[in-house]
Image (tube, rainbow, N blue to C red; front, side, top):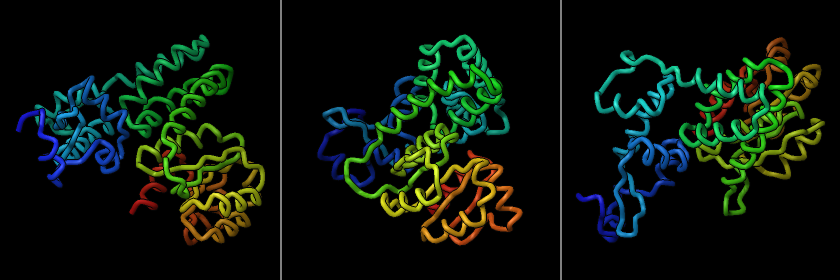
Length: 296
């Protein structure tokens, strides 16, 4: 079959589907899929007469194979050669590329180079799924910066970029979102990092950060009518953990609560898992488990 296909023949074949369907099946957004095709030749979709990309189950499997390599720390630029060699995961060494990116971000933050940070953000978030970019680039870099002016400056640049990314995925239909993402004022950045990860998985979000009272959360849940809720709690909620968890059970939908101190308080109260409410200590692991819970 040639690369340029007859439109009618492809449309009649149930084996082929557009890029948005490939994105839904793999959890990789279409921007990243196109970058893998154009920059690295990782995907070779069929084309209709009008140039539209079409994919099949073999492409789904290939994307899953690409993700396995990336999850092991292999740079996306190295993946094609590994796939062509039928290499095993055990035979590949993790790339030093992430360490280089981390050092570059720390340096740009310490020298207050907004343009440089924005450039790196656009490059990395177009080449990698959001969960990988957060895990292997943002979080290690933030940790290396420590608490100070560099971190504050870097977060002030990354947050608007994440907000713009989230706004690109606003659903066309006026339907209730799959997830309400909310949290205390000190966890705004995490709200948007989580939203970027959720949106990559095809989960529509409504982000309402900076909530100041538990009553406001209950009002939001009733008003937004999301199918599930992801809450980022901080230290100010620790003393009210049992009462807040009891309140969340009344929302009658899957709830994920993220926060190390809050988890300790819930653990002491033997309440880290109550009905549909589950508390997580680690934010990234919590988001991943929450996604698995609401998509199973």
